[in-house]
Amino acid sequence: MDGVVHLRKQLVDYSASLFQEGFLDDQFTQLQQLQDESNPDFVVEVVTLFFEDAERLLNEIAKALGQGSIDFKRVDAHVHQLKGSSSSIGAQRVQKVCIAFRSYCEEQNVEGCLKILQQVKEEYWLVKNKLETLFKMEQQLLAAGDS
Image (tube, rainbow, N blue to C red; front, side):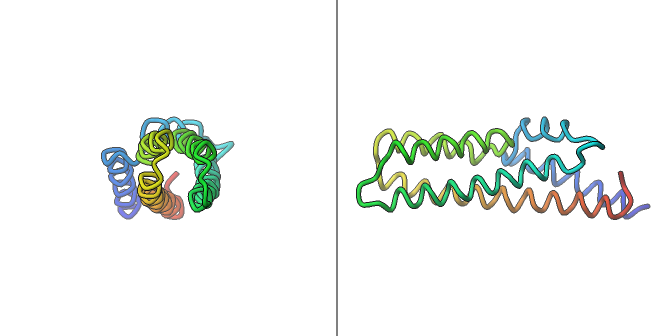
């Protein structure tokens, strides 16, 4: 049983660090609260959809910024969507960078857009890795016989 207690403590500490470091906000906690016995994979499913959506949007944004003449309204629409979906799962740092990205779109600042796209990608991959680690820890805990 000690193993389970140890795993649970690791999970709690890791989860807390994601909030302290600003990767996640209360929206993620609200998602977790919607998960119950009848829907045990709810959070993983919602977050997996976010991953798919985000990666599609990041590709669209990169493609749009690679055009000869950039349609900033289109770029902004994709960034706005990404901001919305990241905020809906509580991916706070991605959301914040998206807000800054939108002001570069408004200014039609190509260099700024390209630079901040890298930042958005970095924040996205960071939160994706963190969440995947969190889900793995939860799986280990379940496998170890914790409910």
